[in-house]
Length: 124
Image 1 (cartoon, rainbow, N blue to C red):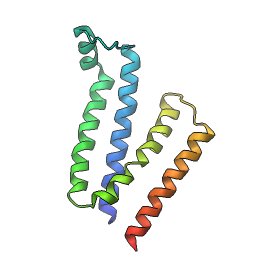
Image 2 (image 1 turned 90 degrees about the vertical axis):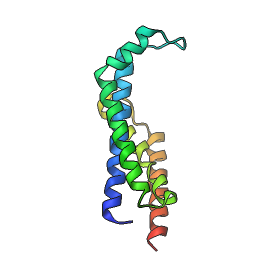
Image 3 (image 1 turned 60 degrees about the vertical axis):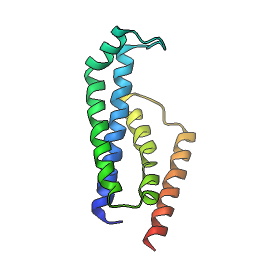
Image 4 (image 1 turned 90 degrees about the horizontal axis):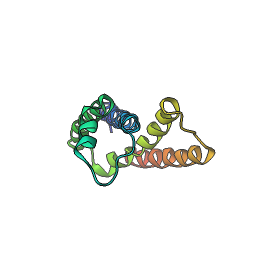
């Protein structure tokens, strides 16, 4: 896989991860949404700036992902989405004050090793 495709994949993952953080921020501002969705809950979702920006980033990440799939084997590209777990954990730690526990760090390390092994096999 070339540097261009790798860069687009990482950008896709970054946009997707940022969208998750913004959706979480928006959801926390709205508060609990019960399973019986009322029109006021829907309106709050659609006028929330963090949710709107998160949705836009999610759509952009989707468009970039389609570009990636047009050039990279899905069996190589898709596992790289696992880096999203890393990005989200780090972003949540910095922006949402979530704890980065030893268990999370070890789990993220396993993901990194797996993706690196997969890409090493593809390069050979």
